[in-house]
Amino acid sequence: MMKRDECLDVIARHHTNEIVVAVYQAAFQWVVIKPDAPNCIATGAMGQGSSHGLGFALGMPQHRVLVLDGDGSLLMNLGTLVTIATAAPPNLVHFVCENGTYEANGGHPIPGKDVLSFAGMASAAGYREVHEFSELDKLDAALPGILKARGPVFVTLKIVPGKMYPENFGYMHSPKARADFKRALKRLPG
Image 1 (cartoon, rainbow, N blue to C red):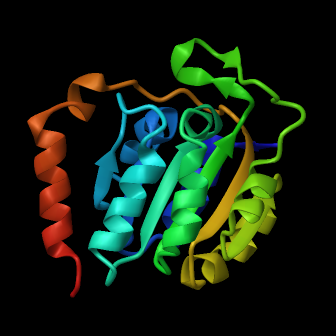
Image 2: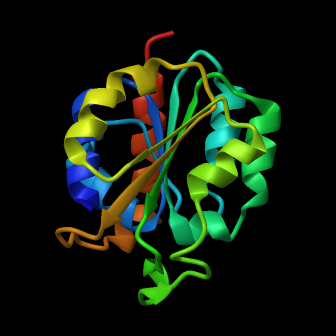
């Protein structure tokens, strides 16, 4: 099993100028790991990170969009898998950090945590590419191809929480977070 922050470190090393839509724990970690990225933070919108990512992918087709989702969050909006697959944005990569819990609500187990396959659901929904990783070195080796692949691409990251990061809700819901995102978007090429 991989630690989420270590996975995000690997993604950050391969990240160039992709728009990043991150939810909850991934968001708290990502803004510390890669604060200068065009970060759209989706805390307080449980289940909507994938929908926000789809909106950016469709509205800004000249830019790659990475969604850093959680398994509990995705369960709140499973229909988005079909919607994304049907819209088929070629510039969308949807990562799901799977640890079997609703972390934002106290770590309660998600339904079907030892049975369901998010990669299987994404594949059945019609995502163009589907991957699943539980080893950091394999994720690291595959990321360059994944980030260049024609989407939509779905990636399950089998994780454990890892190091704790500050849960800075004050920043996440602030005008500064929105202004930082707008500034980062303006710096994007094209």
